[in-house]
Length: 116
Length: 110
Image 1 (cartoon, rainbow over the protein chains, first blue to last red):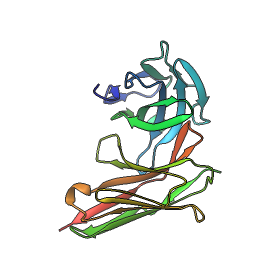
Image 2 (cartoon, rainbow over the protein chains, first blue to last red; image 1 turned 135 degrees about the vertical axis):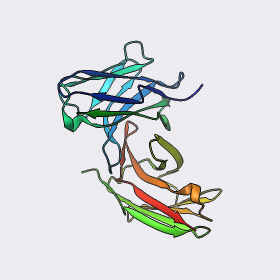
Image 3 (cartoon, rainbow over the protein chains, first blue to last red; image 1 turned 45 degrees about the horizontal axis):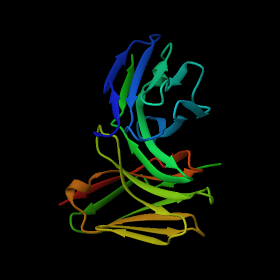
Image 4 (cartoon, chains in turn blue, green; image 1 turned 90 degrees about the horizontal axis):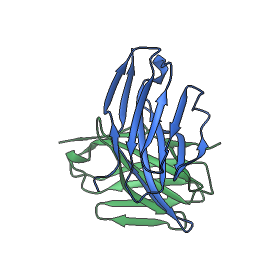
């Protein structure tokens, strides 16, 4: 297993366009998380899935953002009508949660979005 | 609310020890973490400590936890130029998400 993969690594888009990012977690991990990191800040939680169910969404996740994990494996994060304030690094992480235990996250390298 | 605070910058000489400090607010946090981020890269888990522990040592890394003061520190012994990076402290909220500090930029000079 090569860890958590994110695609693309970089995306430049014009304001108003839609973008979609993909995350492939570690195969045996049942949880998948999306975080956003802006320059000079730590990552901020956006949402997470357990298998295919989206269990929590942050207030940061406006109506323009939607995330899916249709088969409990890879996930996509779509941003509609992008704004300059959406420019950030979007990080995906996965973890194994079983039997009430939590074994920590593995992060991907992120997708850097620039909205011009 | 949930908040994690870190100093923003630390400069050390190669071979010296580095100590990065962090304070957090959620007393129910089960785990506390230290992550490392190099330029243009994702987050690399360095170490974590369970909330019922006071100290954890892993090779050059020592984590100290003062649960009463909600204070966490990371000591890097014999700091090398390859340790230059941004270090993030994070607390777990339930077992669902992490709250990160803004990161401490560690600069190692000869």
